[in-house]
Each structure stands twice: as structure tokens, then as C-alpha cells.
Length: 532
Image 1 (cartoon, rainbow, N blue to C red):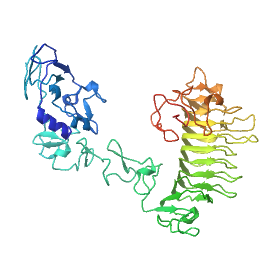
Image 2: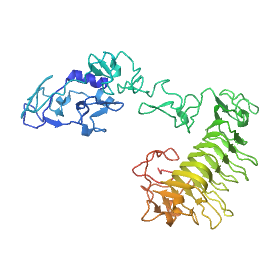
Image 3: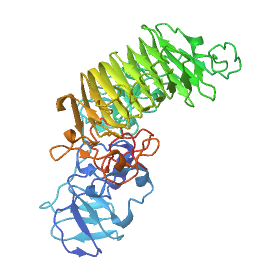
Image 4: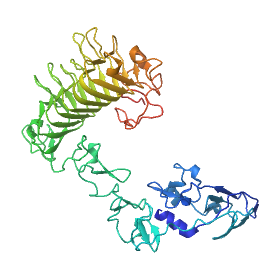
């Protein structure tokens, strides 16, 4: 029971109510509503965080169906309005007259006292009781009332002792009154591989770099935060440039090469973007775990030969514009690579070539790479809100997505207008491995968009495609041509049309699109863009 609710109940007392409706005597518009699901009629029940039990609100008129409302609404409202009173099994609503009698043995209310016909009503009784030591945790008390004080179960905020030793955690949550593992604004309660306090007051792993303290990055693969004392800064227009800065916030390094190699430590490197690109190749050593976090989308290019980024260890890339050389791949990964909010473009080779263990790509565009978009020859590749477009050439067997081995999983992927040499498919080509894409778009400007030897090589669900093998009455996909979709220059789609409602939201799917716009799970669109 929450403290605000307890103060209400102490003021209004536990009342009684009958279950029948009768003629009101001396009371206009009186009625009794049976409401066994109401929070006040359920022993030990605790409202959700930020909500409190409202004795004047029917449970079927509240969001959670339990009579709980936002705390602010209850504070601002006169609980005595219309003579509203809570009682066992129901709510009695009446006019502002203080004295009333309801016939058929239901309820008699006079001011603060209630008389009841025993034939039709019973008392709710007091809050849960306990026999334990006063002021201490009591295992017989419910979750939201974990302490025993004067033989009554009370929230942790009403106890003099702390939550140390409580089975669900050592921290008192002032919102629910329960002992929990952590609270959202707490300090030092969560650490290690679970450094973030979740909405359920349980420590969990980080999922975005911004969740970690200071300027440290998140190890998105494992959930732990990088150390906040291993952070470096790069800005090629910094005060020491041209030259070599110290790599600090005040005096950033001038080139990315100046802070490598970083060794085996988890290292966060912040890189500022501007009109001057970073012309260099980056190599992540096999023992290195590095987060490259861009600001204002810094551009990385190479002048010749090697990839712009080559990964042997583990790298997290966030907010970059990466361009390979005329004869090179943009990113080659033999290790673990995670790419967010970036554009991989205009390379003479493949945009991303993976033969490593894990490749995760989110909210990223891979366009205009002559060797193709993404080539998979590794263990696991996951794509989420990704655009693969205008990759490949007409003179070679290129495609937006090429599978050589391993497993690809994708949601909200747009594969469109890629090129290849006939008779190869230009959207997805399966030369090995398997792929499972849902809520996606696979179309070609011309030619075949899908070239997989058997339907089992590619599972396509709740998607739009121009291949008759993957559309039709026995599928959850629709057949559509590229021209029908109305792509703009960035391969975003207009609102309405044949795509609305085709995508089906599944547990774990992102609630935002490639631009960070909120999706509507009830009328969702396939592909990376949710049109605005």
C-alpha cells in the first residue's frame, strides 16, 4: 500500500457496502457498484509505479483495470466530492448530502460512520497484519508492504529499518513502498554486467551508449559500461591542429591514428565531425575493444588500398559517414562489429564484408558501394532499420545482401534498386547460409530481387517483395513493384498506400524507425522508414 493511499484510508476509514441496489431515502442519485477487482478490495495489492489507489474511481474506468490512477490526479482532486466512499466489494457514489439510507439492507452512511445490515454486507477489515518484530522485515507481509510495524504490514517508507536482507533487493522504492534491487535515480545500486536500473526496478545491461556514466560507451554485446576513465577525444580542428593534441576534452588529438593502438583496455573514443574528413584507415587489433562515437557525423575516407575500418577485435561504431577507396571495401570485419546510426557509402568494394562472429547493424544506410551492400561469410548478422540501396554494378555478380555462410536475421530492412549482372538477383542472393527477414521490403528497379535456391534459404514474413516465389495467398507478404512504393531519394516511403499495416510488430522489435520516429505497432509499415 502506498503512503498516500494509507493516509486516505486512515482519514476515510474502512467502509462497508451492500451488493444490491435499492431506493435511496434522503439521498439523490445514490448507487452501489460491486467492484471486487478494485485495488482497495484486494489485500496487499500495490499499484504500478507512479499510481495510487483511488476510492472514487471504478476499476473498469482506469487504465490498468484496478482502480489505480496517476498520483497527481489524486492529489489534485477533492476525495469527498459527491460523497464518494469506498467499501467492501463496491463503491458508493452519492450526492453531497452527508446523511443517507439505502434500503434492502445495503448500507447506511452518516458522516464518518457506517452501519451495515449483516445479511448483505461485510467489513473489509484492516490492512494485512503480522506477528513479527516491529520495524523489521516480515516474510508474511505482501511485496508492497514488506515491514511489520505494530502488527501491521507497512511500506518500506513507513519503517525505521532499511531494506537490507530483503529477498527482492536492499533498496526502498518510495513510489511503491516495496524493497527492490534498484531505483531509477539511485547511485551505485547497479554495476558490472547489469549497470542500468530498468523500469521493473531490476538491474539490467545497457542497450545504448547514452545510458553509461560520463562519456563512457556501452558494450552493447554484453551489457556492461566501458570505464569512464578510459575515454579519448579527437577533433581535427582542435587547438593543437595541425599537430598532435593530448587526446583530452580540452586538447583533443588531431587524427584518429594518434590515439591508436589502445591496447586491451575497453576504450571509448569520441570523434568530432566537420567539413574536413579524416583521411586514414582504422585497424582494431585482436585484443582491442573500442567504441568509436561520432559527433556531427564525422567522415572517414581512405586514399588507397586498405578498408576504411578493419576489425580483428571488437568495435562499436556510432554516427559515422564511412567511405572506402575506389578499389577497397569500406568495412571489413573478422571480429565483432556493432554499427549504429551511420552511413556506409560510395566504396569501390563492398560496403560491409563480414567473416567474423557477430555483426549488428542498426539505423544505418548502406548505399552506392560498387561491390555490393553487405556480404555475409560469418556466424551471425543482425539487421534492424537498415537501408541497402543502389549498391552493385551491372558488370558483376553483386547485390544488396549476399549470403555466403552463417545466419542473417533482419527486421525493418529496405533492400531496393541494387544492381548486378544478369541473370543474378540484385536484392538478396543466397550462395550459402540462411536468412530470416520480417516486416521488410525487397524490390528491384529491374530484374530479379531475390535469388535463393530454395524458400528455406530465405524466410520472408509480413513483408513486401516483387518476387512471386515469396508472395501470394499462402504467405503473409504482398507483391509490389518498386515503382508502386513511391520511394524518395533517401528510400523513404509516403504515408498510406499498400504498405500500411503489412508489418507485424513482434516482441523485441524496435519501437522507432531509422530516423528515430515512433512506429505505430497497430498500423506498421515494412522497411526501415515509418512514414510521417
